[in-house]
Each structure stands twice: as structure tokens, then as C-alpha cells.
Image 1: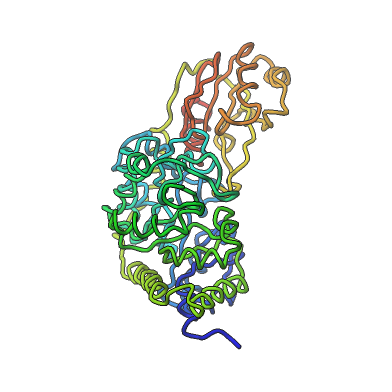
Image 2: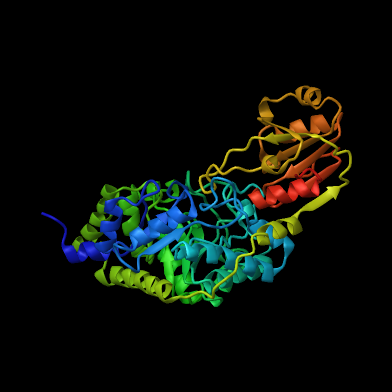
Length: 484
């Protein structure tokens, strides 16, 4: 016996699916015709602009108001430019510059690019306050560690995106910035009083609500004072009492990917996670990146079963689907002001963000050494570093923990060394390698991750880019005088 068609359509209306490859398969389009709310695009769906535009047009043959979402944060998290790196600096760089008008222009440019490709929801900006230097998943995705600064830039980013006709989705509520574990892999805990959240983590969300953000994304984090043993994604105290009643948010609540360990393990699978998120007050459920028709049908079936046996109240799911439909209606009606995109906007901004401690001397044809750093799941394997921007300069790539200082000194052959890395303060072997080299050799360090408070002794200069996008890499190479 099949699912009740009306209940299946209702359940599908709360789901953001995904599909593999650059061409939408038939099932991805057919599910939209059956009521699926939309799809999220990932790097595997993106080859070039013409192909993306053709994909979104194909999806809309299933339903003209289908939601088509993407994680296009600029900086270290990009899907459109996953093959080269983003032409825009990320939030940490924009926060360091401190020009909210610039932040608005950058996000308006990102929004204009998305709108031109038929993408209607940007799962950005990240508005978490990065209060933990060792945060492994937010870092340079944050505008900074100061709630007031983050709030101002968060509101500007939302305004910029939505002025281009693309719905903004501020994330990750109630704040992922204090975690030292990655919710892709486990359920992080932020064990602090609610009052500290109100002072430190929540001001940016108040700002984006005031700025009219059409969506807010949940965090798969545990805040015992609010959520008990489960994540915020499954907590009515967070999604209803705090976000809606206290902060007055009326838009769509979108979950972070339910395939992430912080949600799926806590619930016992993606289907049960979907039911728990809906019951808690979520409206649009992002299933994840690895999705096929069978998974979508399985999740929809679990929602229908919960509706049938009373685990889920039908009015709650109707409310969720209604908010998803309202978001789709806004995106279809929104006509962003036509924007002429300045191709140098992001590069000029990245140059403003570069900060130099020390003196840049002795950099005539140095040896550039890039220290390997693993990418997070959020970032994906996006190229980074100075390499694409260097002219007549030797570059090598090494693993810090496997590299002897004497080896690098020998390769340098009397030339100075420029060490380039991300999150060097917590890179295994990174601090030790830099200290040993700087004790006997002229060294300049380029930090392209979250800079923290750590500064190595003995180096000639410490250069901070506040991100590792294509724009950040070019800016660093130019400041060092090494660009072509």
C-alpha cells in the first residue's frame, strides 16, 4: 500500500534535497512536480555558469517556484568557484576591514551572480561569533569575535543578498562560534548559561531578524541549558521559544544538513531526524549532499508515518510547508535591482584586509613553502595558497610534521623562506617547524586561516590574510611583492 498522496505531497513540501552530477536526473525534476520544496546545489553540481543556469532552468520545469539553494559564503566556502577559489574574501576579512558598506556590496555582488544563474536561496551569511580560536568549522567563516561587529556585518550581508533578489539564510542558530568540535562529525556541546548566549552569540541573530532575513539555519550543537541532551535542531525551546517568540523571527527555519553526525546520530538516522526537527519547529529540512530518490522517499515516508500515528501534528507540518511555500513565493516575486558586477571588487577588498606585523624585507625570489592543511567538509577541497599568483618564484608543498627544518634550509640555498599555512597555531608540527626555521633562517609567515593570538618568535614578518580564497591569495602575493 502506497503513501497517502496528500500527506506525501505535504511531507515533500518541507524537504530540500540534492542530486549528483552536473545534470539534474529525471527523478530530481519529477519530485519537484510532486511537491518537493527544492534542491541544494553543491560543488559536484557546478561546472561552469552556463551549465548551472541550464540546470536551474531544467529543475524549474518540475515546478516554477522550486527553491534552489547553495552555500556561497565567499572566502573559504564556495560552490560556484570550487575549482579555483572564490574571487571574494570571506567574512573574517570583511570583519577585519570593518566597512559595513563594503560587506553589503560584496554580498550584493554574490547575490547578483546567484540570481543570474537561477539560484534563489543562499545558505549564508555565517553570523556565528567565533569566540573559540580552536573552532575547527567556523573560523574565517565568521565576521569576528566581537558580537557588535559581527551583528553589524551580518545585517549588511543580509541586506546585500536580498537586494539582489536572493533570500539570505543566516546561520547557525543559536551560535556555533564557541565550539571546538565539528558538527559534521559529532555533536558539539556549548555548556554555558543562556544569559551568556544572549550577550555573546545571539546579537547577530537579532540583527539579521531586524534586517529582514527570510531564513535562519539551525545548528547541530547541544546547549544543555536550552536543549538538554539533543541538538538545537531538535529543540522547541530554541526554535520556537527563543527564535520566534523572543526574537520575533517570522521567516523559514532551515535545518543544517540532517546527514551530519550532529543530527543523524542523535536521532538514529536522517528520517527520524527529519521528524524530530519538524516537531521542534523547523520548516525546511536540508537532507544533505549525498541524496538519491530512494532517500527522499524514505524521509517523506517517515514524516507521513509520524503524521499518521500522531507523532507529528498535521497543523505543524502544514505550517512548515506553508513557510517554505512563502519563501518560494518571495524568491519568485523578488526582482533584485540589476547589478553591474565589478570583477575587481573582491580582490580590492582582500587587499584591504591584509595585515602585516614586522618588516617585509629580503623577499627577492624566496622559497615559498605551503604547509598542507586538511579541508573541512564545509569547505571542501578548494585550491588555496599563493601558488596561482606567483611570478618566477619557487613553491613547494609539504606536511609540517613530516618536514625537517634542515631540508627546507637546504632547498632555500641562502634565500629567505615564506611559510604559508592555515590555522598554524593548531597545525600538527607547524609551530615547531616555524620556530626551528626562524631560529637560524630569515622567515616570513603568511597565515591564511583564523589567526588566533599566537605569533611565532623570530620571524621577520607575520602576514594575516583572514582567509584563503583566490582573492586572499592574490592579495598576499601582491603585498609580498611576489605577484605576476
